[in-house]
Image 1 (cartoon, rainbow, N blue to C red):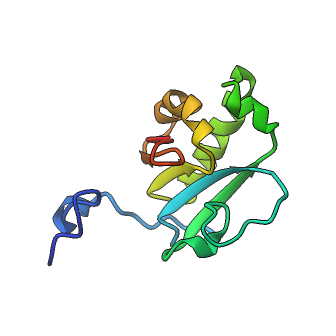
Image 2: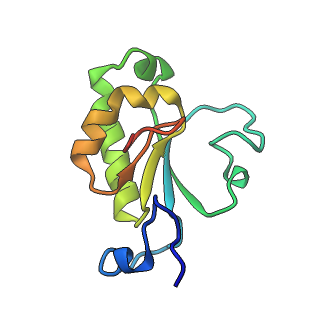
Image 3: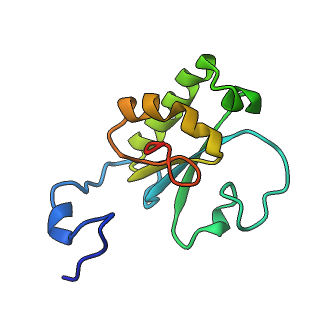
Amino acid sequence: MKKTGDYLGSPADLDGVVSVTPQPVAGAAIGIIAVNLVYPKLPGNVANASTFAFPVDYEVIDLAIEQLFEADPGAVDQIVQAAKRLEARGVRAIVGACGYFANFQTQVQAAVVRGRHSSGGRLAGL
């Protein structure tokens, strides 16, 4: 079988890593943590699932957007718990819908074992 790309590795590299956990829904490779903000999200916005050519899963959290901007320590638990819920649903990577999620990258990386990236490319990489 052909190599699928460096970010996924070869099919042999994935043996024993991919598992199917019984759950209500499945098939989303990417989990996205988004702040519960109500505004039009047109295609191209990370919070619009039609932006992606593959299935994504969302975990929406309720906090003031300023908490992300200011790296508020009071937001850490909510963000980490959101990442853990996405991980439990089987996503292979977790990203934040806003670049300011990168302020919490270290905490999320320490809490989950999946690939991690924040908006713009880093989150879990957060």
